Image (cartoon, rainbow, N blue to C red; front, side, top):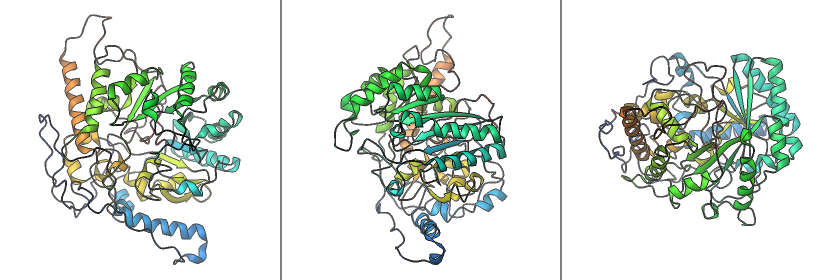
Length: 529
């Protein structure tokens, strides 16, 4: 099995105890990490959050840099906040030592443009507006033309410096479709113009992630003309699945979203796919079948953003409710005989089991390669980190003061490019590490410790991966049918370039080797829609 990118010698982990061996390969029931309910250092198996309250933020008031301006004061306060909430990586990772050990930085390949910081919906579970980070309140409602121009310049500069064959843009929010149709393509046009001048060999792809309620013929026409594909976030294909997706007056948004999706389905060349967060209260098969009614080319099934200090609903040691939900869908999808849609989570696991690289950070060990540009021009990490603590995605960098090359040495991003060496000891010893990769980075968080723990979904991921591995092995041992006969679990034809779904919580990752010029388009990260 191919191991993801890390070169050189492993980074030292002086406080890392000898990890407990993972469960045996033929154990049908995944065993959670040892000491699941006992206190443990940050590099050991996860513990239940007995003191879930995060450390307090630094007090307001003047600090040692008070005379240097409010932006510097804010940056210093943010450094203190990172150190208190997440010692790994902010006080325990020496980036210079990592570079000396052979861990080279990987260029940014996906740029998320927060063209809007507000949304027309008020979903009760939204990680941008309803979770730990409330930084959106300080952001301008929309990205200005000047900020767009500066972003385009910085992206082109980075593409030229690293000879990137392709960069992927994601128009994001908030709700990016709050912009008028004539303005939707402006950021993409600006980036394409700048990249064409600085790095003419670099191709620019673009996607917009939306809640679907504002999709109209005019907007779809404008997006199609600009070559911008559309991904839609939904909680299922029935009104009962979407009771928490409401507007600011508490009115349901499903009817408008469904109308937009039906319109989008008539434009398959613009249709990237549908995202759906797993909801244990909903029947998995009903949810899957209801989404198929919108003819999505791809479905992204996402685990709720949760961590050890804020566990997901239904979380309990020794139980795997999320694996159970997903495996019900997997069995239906795998045995359909003909591909009705792609399900990225399952396809990624299968690819990793076969030793192939993936393009997202939710699984596997390849390095993160996503940057977020807020409406005010600040540069941040992936939005999904906002579920951990206030300012968790902040870097203190802006388009005016920093290049994307400087972002590569930020401890938060550098940690997510270390592969195996960024993981807890138990994860590094696990036989599933090349597939699981420790799980999605935000799911590893515990307040006051940081991100060097197994995923809060560790037991679910073990069960899911083992079940899919067994299904793949059985399929490999089954005699092939006659030509033209359907094969259970097989897809019909390889996907065309750029047909994969938009993934809201999964930042794009850099490939282990330089990608071919026509590699599949990357997938957008966390979705506020």
